[in-house]
Length: 417
Image 1: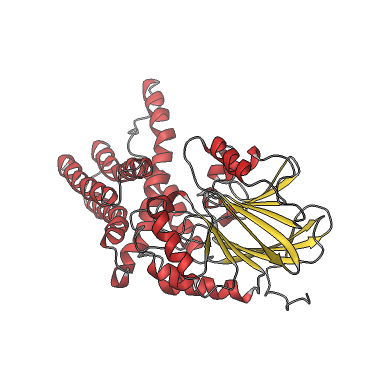
Image 2: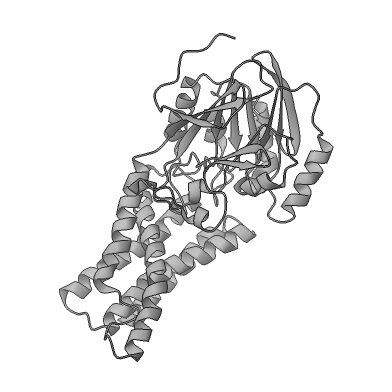
């Protein structure tokens, strides 16, 4: 039976890898394939551990069915993406994929602590437990996976508002930031329309989107995305993210045809509320990111007389590399609010934050405020749990001081120019 379990795993692993690599063979694809295959491998590992630990009877049968369902869930999302068609009637499979991925990840983390601890205790003769079978301790990753998936799904498109005083402004400017849309067969046109409608309701002076407009492995399917974004109030300024790179030129052309401005190491200059504004949007680079940022800054020195200078950079690593005072506000995304966070328990820590990276919210570096967006995604890989997707609204006001959160109610009536 153990051999059968591993044969089933091999079949799902090969099928999933095929779906992944039909989308490309970039470094990102290799990383995704490695993580997903590791997640898939948790399920036969648990089956092996249960058998070796002596589990039998109806309990073993129920466990086998549950583990097989998990394998189907992990594979299912990539199957849906690879079809390149709206999810439609396969939405239960897409919904299953979230807790299935999450359970594999949480259980893998548990085994990283469980297995060495049990091996040590067995050497000391203090336990007869098996290092690959946590038993009732599996209720912890199961609970986290189910609650995290449910909580995140029910907290979509949360509006967060902030007031930020800036010394050079003469009149208020309202900016709405979207990021990490990841349009795909599981991010439906209805989802995007709802997000666009909520953005329009904020009555912004400027809409910015900081990268990752498309979803991995279905990058070419952005027609309905462009259709939805066309309803946004102008101007709309967009910079690319890492998942946009394979289709960046085609995506840029499609956006430009609708009057949406795609900034790839380019600057936009205009007037908002009667004031000169400049916005620089930079490309995404895995390697030599600092050097390429410096090249973009050299190519676009600050224009005199601008009351507001913004930088759109998908990658939040770029914030600490900026010259002091070059920008009033830096807007980024990419880290999906920390990927896995404790907000579902009312706490601030996130996985990305604990690793020392910029995860979400405001950061101050050499006098410049940077904001890392939590993302506007709907569903997809990897499962982002315990962090609510958001729509970020910035009320930029004349003055000086630190950002302040505003109540999450409806947008105020349009102020006079």
